[in-house]
Amino acid sequence: MALLQPPLKFARERISMTPAAQIQTTTELLHTFHTQALPADGVLHHFFWKHRFVGSKDRQIIQSWVFSFYLSLASTLWIAQRLDPQLSRLSDLRVLLGLFLIRHNFLTYEAIHLLCDGQKHHPSPLKEHERRVLIAVASLHNATLPPEVLHEISEHWCTLLQASLGYALPLIAASLNQQASNDLRINTLKIPIDQGRVYTFQSAFPLTVILFTLQGISKLKTRDPSSSVILFILKPAWMCQIIALAPAAKHSRWLYLHVC
Image (cartoon, rainbow, N blue to C red; front, side, top):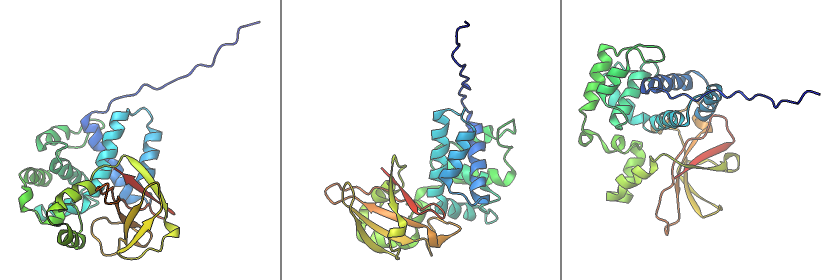
């Protein structure tokens, strides 16, 4: 009797993406978010499931760029439209991404200019108006930016936090914009959403949550503001640390909160 052979297992080799391919992939993902009514985490999950050969380091970089881009979208648009009033969010995603990468020190203008060479899986060469914008933002000084742009907080909330926090505002703003490492879920169907009201939740540790809708807030934009919220989550005073803020997914009963 023939010996039974174990089934062969085929594993596609992991590949490393070039920085140019990372820029192109991130741009295409951002375009998908703007053209399809899907939450960002779902689009990313589907993309990396479909492209399982992409390495973990590349996944981490792309996810970091995507979520950091959206956290700083309001200030990125503010700067872009003052450098070039013709810029629009959808048609100029590539230059907006480049502006974001330069301003937050992920890449230099010189590196982006070289990486946009039009090769396969690489971004096409920069156009003249794109070069002008990216060169200008590379020489931009933070001292020239208004506080709400510098700290990535809407003007309304920046004014309120400045009045109550004073010199601590930059540290608090930096904490709010840190990339998260863990998740916490709250069932939004059981929370009466109200503008600016404070709630306390029983959890593994006490949480004070300032909950408000996206109506009239320029920090983050969604297609359906009534179903989305932002939360500032504060640990108790003895821990002295703001945890994070995050938007709810579209039409989702669960609000995913990233916890630093």
